[in-house]
Length: 85
Image 1 (cartoon, one colour):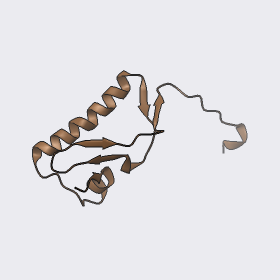
Image 2: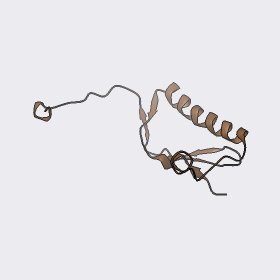
Image 3: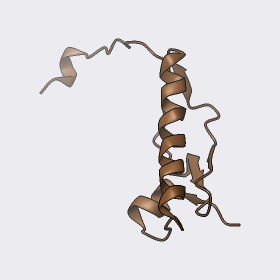
């Protein structure tokens, strides 16, 4: 069965969950993924919309987050004076 990513669902409108329960299960899996990360002191640091895919019949979510998980924290940003206009 073809799995659909967030871009397919949100932007392209190509994919639709077959039932309301499948949509709820997919949404809860999405939220649980981020809750687990944040409780571990980590963040998802990518903008790849295809990293999350869903089975439209069951709502099952698969995540390809390799290289996208980082420790949470504040990063210092250095701005040189000549960059300010």
